[in-house]
Image 1 (cartoon, rainbow, N blue to C red):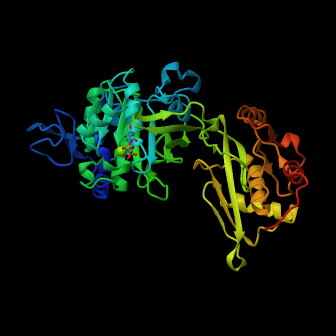
Image 2: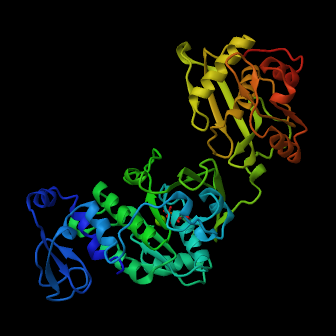
Length: 473
Ligand code: TYD
Ligand code: MG
């Protein structure tokens, strides 16, 4: 017997303390089930609120009506053999567990394609392009079967206009509905290969009140959608808005429930970055890089030089190019630093693309090893292209940018580097140094400073700045 949405509904009531109390007090519980759609209610109703049938409720007794999660899983397996543990060696992991999203940048972030039966939370600021990305994803998934796009924010006409703009010709089932039970029934009927809910904050279950976006509503609706995803082996993407501070508001509470959490963020201007913050099926280091155009999001296939600043003439002081290893690719990035005397002598660090603690540590090592004062300076650090970098190999280029800013001596244009700096001023090895060096030379950087060709911070400074006199400004 297939699982019915009505049966699952009992889970909603488990969040209601009144029902829990009732269920523990009563020895044998009575509940009412719609004979037409299977919806359960604690009291008899003349008309089923789920399917609209009249006089369809019949009285039921026993454990299946209990408002517990355990009861829910029992119901799901009703009519099937009792579930048992499986031996690891007997579990099948066939090739068909993933399929390609049609966009290699999305596949990369997901760990090699969309995992069937998985749940993915997609967070991002309003207007960043989540709905656009999801619609493009739907379009390519139609190759696999029916695709359901649940829209709680935009009307069907708005979605059609966006689809026309994106030149999407394939059929997508668009459902502008926010009541979870109605949505679940549609999923049961359609059995799609991909479900998009845009956004999860708009979904609600009427038993939990009519206000969408509360923690209970988000948790419950997500839980129900994840169950359906597993039941039908169909991936579900849950779009979520984030606050200005960057946290996934509200939906943060469901991050532990979903398999993957993706975060869509702004690079500079039209660049958009898709990062995995959690992924049960792949690495969280990968980023997907897109550009927003008039006709939707285009993936950037060769991003190595995307973040480099094309400059005519001399490179100013305070700039150094880093070969950064992000996921499985090397990206060339420009690190910019500026130092100015601190007001009142109290040094402050302004850096939102590189962790302030890293900037502070690198400045301290420079001060100690090169007798160059940073502790009376305000330090500003930026990464061109708007991308955040957390990689250890940024230490050396950051140190060179700071040194250059403080002394006023520019780093030669053709120089790129990568390396971790120890507190003692040594340059420590970083992963994939060979690939960093190769990408640097491919991008026209003839001088690549790495742990392999330098003995320490002082040596790197000498190599790059030669015998130039340090002039503290
Ligand atoms: P949208 O996907 O609606 O963002 P979100 O769902 O995250 O709120 O994208 C909205 C922005 O993207 C809007 O400013 C218009 C722009 N856009 C384009 O530049 N090109 C396009 O092809 C599309 C569809 C949108
Ligand atoms: Mg949207």
